[in-house]
Image 1 (tube, rainbow over the protein chains, first blue to last red):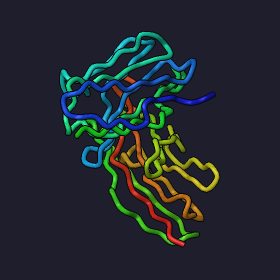
Image 2 (cartoon, helix red, strand yellow):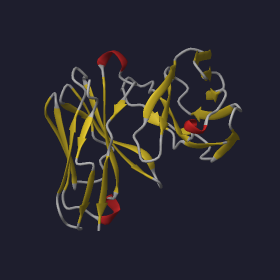
Image 3 (cartoon, rainbow over the protein chains, first blue to last red):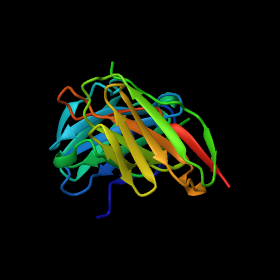
Image 4 (tube, helix red, strand yellow):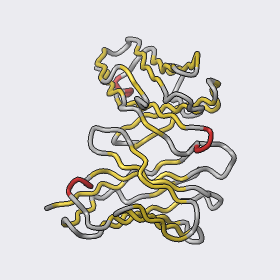
Length: 114
Length: 112
């Protein structure tokens, strides 16, 4: 299996621009998670999906953030408009129904907003 | 607010020594516990899971769980420089959701 795939791996953008991060989970996994990691705040859960349905988005910092999962093999996290404080590494992770807590992380997208 | 606490470190040990990483958690009803390893610039990787009180061994790694004390630890025997990484403790929720709570991680440095 190819594992969780994320794109792009690095993104540099200017404040105010729209940013879209992409994720392809491991085939057959039922859960998909979006995390943000910074030195200051550690690993934060933003939102998670079960069978393409958003279950808990309480970690999404504000309305500028949105996430979708149109099918079992694709999810996006969008930031519009982006701000410098959004600079972080964004991870996507997936897990199977049989072992939901055992998450498999993608390589991450390092976002820099200038 | 469910919390998972770890000493941020760095924990520095000589090659060949035993590294001991500790984690405490606040949710007394938690039933599942995990250790992830994260190399610098890489993503977290699950290395151990433990569900019952006591010890669980996997190669050079041993996870220890004490639910009464709300304490979980990871021992790394015969530490190698390649073990240098940040180790994240994660605790499964007791509330019916499937969201693990992650600690901030402990940085481990194994020096030759």
